[in-house]
Length: 508
Ligand code: UN1
Image 1 (tube, rainbow, N blue to C red):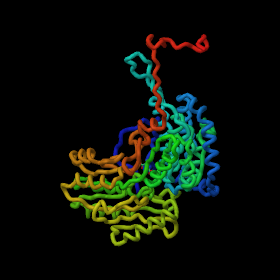
Image 2 (image 1 turned 120 degrees about the horizontal axis):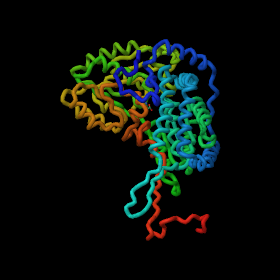
Image 3 (image 1 turned 120 degrees about the vertical axis):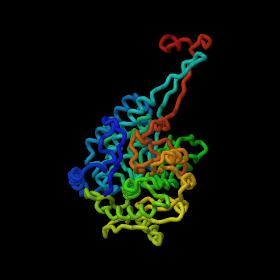
Image 4 (image 1 turned 90 degrees about the horizontal axis):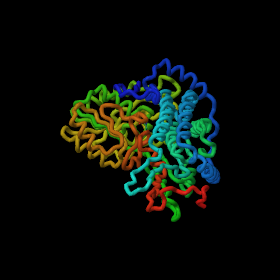
């Protein structure tokens, strides 16, 4: 069975981050209790997913634009407190939210719980960061001015979220934009509108004014209507690299359109490099988790395993055995390791690719007869560069490298142009140092799994084709959502301004 991370980790401040983050660790009894509740909730049909029309999108932006000044003027401490209240509400409603994640996104019980946990973590973390990081700063005034730097909301942000983290990423992006003083029009993925609706309802209940956070639903057309509107003051997007580029292009359209920021978190061809000193059991556990948990549908997931030649056959043999133990099935069943993929289109794409690579299969696993189950598959390739794109599913590619070629191997991975996650398994300090120095990735994981970045501990996000930064769940994220305004007042007598006259006292 797919486990959580097995390695001791630095203790997190428990008041901020609950113990069940990355909850592979929850036991079967607890999973069963949760699953019973989840299944009952999940048995009720979801409302038909509607899409917003372009006119709805315009109306949503109208509302958010009207709400922006009032929300921006709400004290920072109040906005932060609302996020904390939202975190509490997420926890109070965690069973219902978990059930929605199981039902809409086919998340397993541990993944669905981790999802709610992470959403609450984002809210608490950004509240904390906002209080300290967004407060006005007094700057030096050697020539006699009073200088202040203020971080203020920019206007109406669009947040566009993926289906694979329909609560955590949806709400993470949105909470960050809100606490920074922006109004938000939020668009979840078309596959997962209901969990987003539930999240927005809770945000309003927590105290976000109804019009400061407006939900629009639908696919790429709705996203395009949103990003093409010149009133949008910034976009936070998580999804594919091609879509990020389309958004970037849309934001530049129109001569009069203001220049606005895009925060994009996209895909990766994430590699794990394993040398002959690695502990094989640990490698196998971490590969199985990184490549196959969540059916490989995480942008952090391992896509390319690079084994040093000497140990390759042994590790592959162990992986074959471990893959046999994976349980595929109903995500609401507490024993399930891997559920179905998100939809028919994803299924068709992955199955067609997998079948085209049939001659190179090292291992594939049987799946339930019905449902969108993509068999976890290990595929042999000759060189890292033979894998040229991200396959967003439980498909792992394996290649080998020769002793003495660690630096070259890292360089070849870098040359793919993505830069999200990378892993190294080695007991040699010098090798770890080399990879730390050379890897051009946002998240490097040494001797551990490559998924499950913890808010505040592993700020997440990549570079190159993998995204713009700044990293979600990190100390620099909120600033990008803000307009940075420096105010300087001449307080010298030469400036004639030693005391600003109060208008009420005759300055008029
Ligand atoms: C994504 O799949 O879009 O590290 C992000 C992880 C998650 C982030 C994945 N916290 O696996």
